[in-house]
Image (cartoon, rainbow, N blue to C red; front, side, top):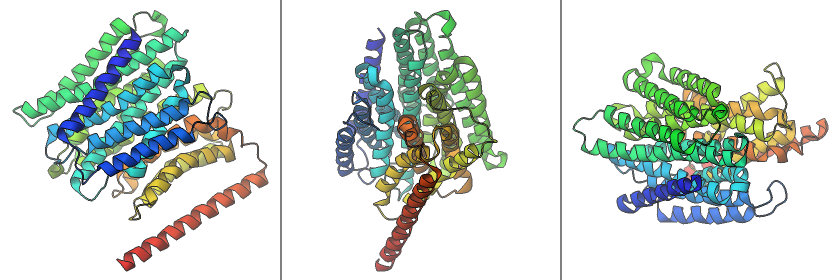
Length: 498
C-alpha cells in the first residue's frame, strides 16, 4: 500500500509540474531552453562521475542516480519558477511555486520506490545535484520578476531538502524495514500535499473577490492538515503505538502554525518590530516542540508544513507593497535553520561511530561555527559578480569546502559546521541587504548535504599530522586568494573594455 501511495504522489507531482510548464510556458528571458539542455547535460555528467564504487562514492551507484534525479528535478523547478512573468499576477506565481515544489516531490518519490536499499546516498545525491545545477545555470536576475522567480525557486529548494531529510530519517526510525517504509511513505504523502495545497490556493486567489490571502491560506492549511490526519489513520496505522504515529499530524500542525504566525508578522509588523529575529524565534520554538514529539523526523515534517505557508506568501508578495524582500527574509532564514537542525540528526544517526560530543568551550566548535556562518555569504557575494563563469565555480566550491574542513579537522567539526551553515541565510540577510537570498540558500543547502554525504570520506584524511594540515591549509588558502585576485583582475579589465 505504501508503495502505491508513493508512486501516486510522484506521478501526480510530475504531471502537475509538467502541466504548468507546458500550459503557462516559462519566460525565456528568465530561463531558456539552452539552460535546460545544459542542466540535463550536467545531470548526465554527474551520474557518470559518481559511477565508481570507490570512495568518496558508495557501492550500488545510489549517489549517481540521486545526483541525476536531483539535477533533472532542478531543471523542472527552474522552468516552473520562470513561469512567473508578472509579479503582480499572484495566482500565476502561486501556481508556479506549486509546480516548482512538485518538481521536488517526484525525484524523492522515485528514490524511495526504486532505490530503497541505497536511499541515503541517493537522497543526499539528489540535493547535491539539485543545488549544483541550480547554481551553475541559475536564473537571470536583472528584473523584478526574475527576483520573484528566484524567491519561488529558493522556497522549492528548501522544501525539497526537508522532504529528502524526512525520508532519510525514516531509515533510523522503527524496529523493522517495513516500519521504515511506512515512515518514508507517510512523510512523502504529507510533502505531496503541499503542492496540492498551493494549487488550491492559486485557484482560490484567481477567483476570490478579495485580495486577502486569508482564505487561500486557510484552505492550504486544511489540505495539509487533512492529509496528515489521513496518513495517521490509514498509512501509519500498522505502526506500534509506542512509535507515536500521531506525531506526524501534530508536527504538521506546528509547521502550519509557525508559518501562519511568521506570515502575519510580516504582513502587519514590518521592520519596526524586528520581524526577522522574531521569525527565527518562532521557528526555533516550533522545531524544539517537534523534536520533543518525534526527534529529527518531527523537525523535518514541521519544516514541510511551514513551507506550505512560505510558498504561498513568497509567491503572492506584490512588488508594489515593498513586501517581497521582507517575506523572503522572514521565511528562508528560519527555514534554513530548521533544515540544519534536521540535518544534524541525520549526521548523528549516520556517523555516530565517527563523531563525538562537543561543547562551545571547544575552540574547534567555535571556529567551525563561524566558518559555517560566514563562508556561504562570502561565496555568494563572490559569485554575484558580473563574470558568468563564477556561478559554476562557486557551485563546486560550495560542495567541496565542507568536505575539506572535515578532512583537515576531522568529524568533530560536523555539528558546528551544520549549525553555522543553517544560520548563514539569517546572517546574510541581516548583514547585507543587497545579497540575493536564493544564492545563499543554494550554497547553504549544498554545504549541509555535502557534509551529510562526504563526512566519512573526509574523516579518512583527518589523521594527518599537524604539519601536513598546516601545509594543506596554506595551499588551499593560497589557491583561493589567487583565484579571487585573478577574478577581480578579469572583472576590472572587462569593465574597462566595456
